[in-house]
Length: 571
Picture 1 (cartoon, rainbow, N blue to C red):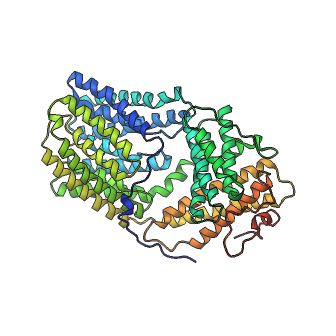
Picture 2: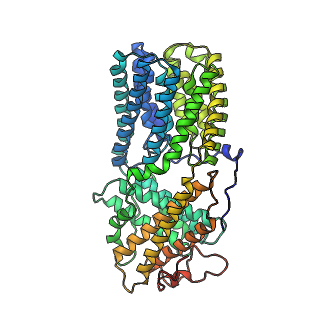
Picture 3: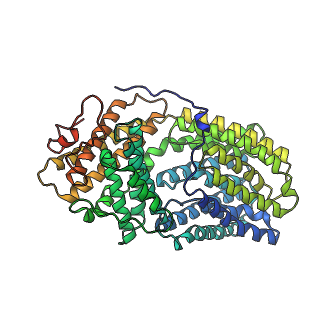
């Protein structure tokens, strides 16, 4: 049965605080270490007016902290190039024209490109917002063609320093990101095993477990294909998490949590014996085959509505700020750019968080405003403290981090020259409200009917993956590598289905969603996963561990799947 998507606009839920990230201190410390030397050097030279350009490179230290170091090196290099490229375009536009309408238009186009590229490449937090903040602010900074090379060179040099700062921890803990990802998967598996596959909230716990395991495999693959004993040990632990996902009733949650705790720090990784006759040889290759990345074109195409929303919303927000005579229209543009999430409902939540965080942030700035006027060093130190606070708090909720980001952004404007605090506060409040209202209106106006089509594709992919696994199960002696690859492909398809369904559920102005079909496909898919796990000998075959069984009669479905034809087990 299908039903139309309700238009819910949560308020209290958008401001609820969550748990901080396990590594909240890493980006916080990294950005401070990346920002401090360039700014202190400029302070010693009496050239704090150039701090905006070094900040462009230094803020790249916010990215890539969840990625293995081999992948982090590539990601950070691309982020630095993207940051400097956006800065170069903005500075060139500023040097060629002072027409604010043209500059806002360029800024909106840059914001749309930055949003699309960051989402398509899944670069991770903070996404496009920092890139757009730097490029938009640079559009309205006085510039000449002759100074362009020097300013871009400063950004590149600071970006190179940020790259070194973020890569340095790899010398002490080279497998840290992979260990954390595996620990998160084990904890998620323990939470699901605690429900025994039928308790309250088991469906949500199952989806979270599948997503964590999928992310952990991607982390291990991103580390490279070179043989590594540490990676092999982590792979064996992930297999145990997969067993818990497929057969929660046969799993001891405390054992999984114990393994997760052992992965903290740099201690010895628990050695888990391979399960199944040929489990050891199936790791790596089968996973890589099941998680092959999609082409860039395939990833960009579904993002077209988000790109249009970003371009339109940023442009209209900037134009509205200009029409009202606000002196810094790029603040309205950046506010609009920061709103756009996977769907309209999440965009609304981000708008609430942005407005609340900025309004509280301007109060913090009002309290801090006298300090920078005491001495330029105070300006640098306060900015560093706000950088740390923003990254330490933003993981709990976006609005809480914005309480530090807002005064930091206001203080950055004083690096070039001292300004009236009252004018800055007024402009910031007005621009925030304009950007949030206009930006959200653009999100509502630009429909994303592709969300329903993407859900159909995800459903079809999951059903085909399940049918393929079922065909292998029906064979008397399926080839072990093929069965393992089919299981992981099905697991990846179910993760994609859940993510696509969640995104589509928060989108407006579209046809009713096939909610019942999604539920049935997920249940059938997880039953087939359980059947493959038992067929591979990873858990006892005489135990009923049906994680997808419903209360109305799917008894023993797991054990029957392996003996049925594809048509017999089609949902």
